[in-house]
Amino acid sequence: MPVTVMVIIRSSVGFFLLLFFVKLIGKQQMEHITYFDYIVGITIGSIASTLSVQVNENAWSTMTGMAVWTLLAVLLAVISVKNTALRKIVEGIPEIVIQNGKVQIDVLRKNKVSFEDLMSMLRVKGAFRVDDVEFAVFEPNGKLSVLLKSQKQPLTPEDMNISTQYEGIPTNLVVDGKLDMDALRSVNLTKAWLEYQLKKKKIMNIEDIFIAQLDTQGNLFIDMKDENTTYTISIKE
Image 1 (cartoon, rainbow, N blue to C red):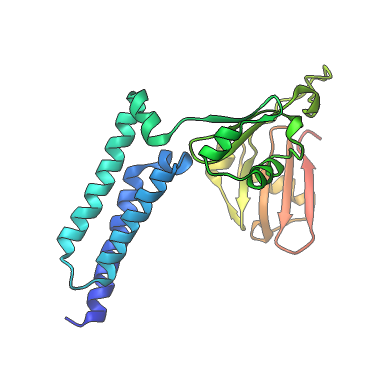
Image 2 (cartoon, rainbow, N blue to C red; image 1 turned 90 degrees about the vertical axis):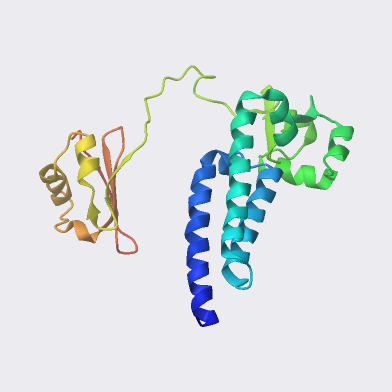
């Protein structure tokens, strides 16, 4: 068999095998990925690349290696959910790096983060002064969580005793010119109703719409496929 054909076959097998193993590991690892998870993922990907181009390597042993790394990652994740001590070892624990405006230098050095890097992380969170921060925590995934001091936090409607309306997730009725009948049914509406609303703005073809989105306040937002045209129709009128 020509080497090129063999590489194509092995690459295809490796691609779909990697897809399967990633699905097996699950979304949890991607959402709360730690440095260890990252290294495991890189290793599995590296084994997949070996399967793809190292035609002299035994394919079954390479796929077995991928499977073992994946199953160990899944097993460790399952055990860590129930075992707090193991979870702390594998994932690490949150560490307070700023408390009441005071930088915890030992935590900063332990995590090998410079003060300049810390300030960069704070600026991303909208904090430009250390003394504006009540708490800053290094999370196990390497991200920084920041709680501003109460006098530095932005006002909310609750702070000013202002009542607000419920604001849920809008429903996409049309996406890229395609009508979603399931979305229409989920809000107890029909295609005829939508066409009636569109005619108010002289829109005759659903295919001309890029996005039609209905929010929970009764507003139908329409973004046409041209560069400039948008409409907002109040269905309460």
